[in-house]
Image (cartoon, rainbow, N blue to C red; front, side, top):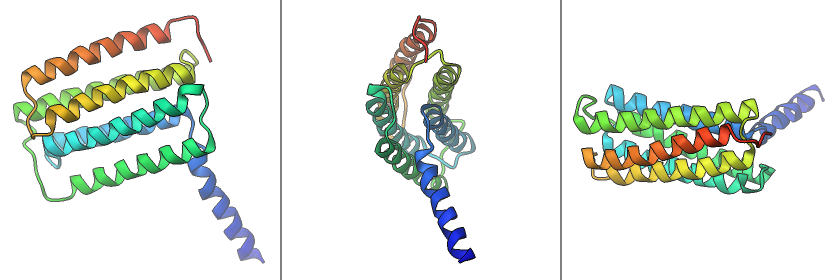
Length: 193
């Protein structure tokens, strides 16, 4: 009897973990995963091509977040789907950082990808802070995540051949600058949570 109650309590805890996600926590998870990608680039455990593939996956997660937040709420099924997608990206990051392929963190291409991923981290942190402070509504966060999806897709496209050129980075930075201005405007408009 005692073990049954304990088992039920443990099952309830694990089943609610996926559903306990909030907008801020899903964005924080994006930040964490982007940091893992950047760390892999910096220490050479990820190649530029592997990072590009992971950015394509991050783009899908951001797109899912944007769709889920379109109505301003995260339903239980949307939370579960996001958790599944983020878990898959997490597993792929772990696999790619431990698969034996190494990159040159000092190459110009890796440096460009590192800078772009760092910018993603900064933008995601700004969105998360806006959600937590109430300066961003869930709908606004969703629209900003759609823009982050676009930037991630540009990074994936640029690095899919294992090399990010200066021209490709300039295009990515133009999109990131546009998104930075959007984040600022959305955080400082009249809408609040």
